[in-house]
Image (cartoon, rainbow, N blue to C red):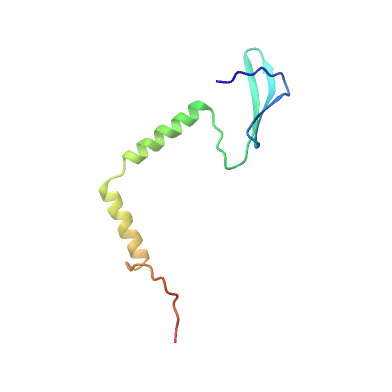
Length: 91
C-alpha cells in the first residue's frame, strides 16, 4: 500500500485520468473529490461490497425455468428462426 500525505487542495493522480483532491479536513474526517472518466465506477467500499454481494446472489438465483422462459421469449420475438446471413431481397 502506498501512503501519501496531502494537505487541503492538493491532488493525487492515478494513471493519466483519475484525480483525487483533498477538499476539506475537519477533525478526523477528510473530504475527497474524485475526478474520473465516466467509464470508471467510483464507490465507497461498503457500497462496492454490497453491489458485489447483490450481483453474486442474482447470479446464483438463475433457474432452468428462467432460462427456458427467456429462450422462448427470444424465439417468439424472432419467429424461432436462426438469423439469415443474406440480406432480404425482393425480386
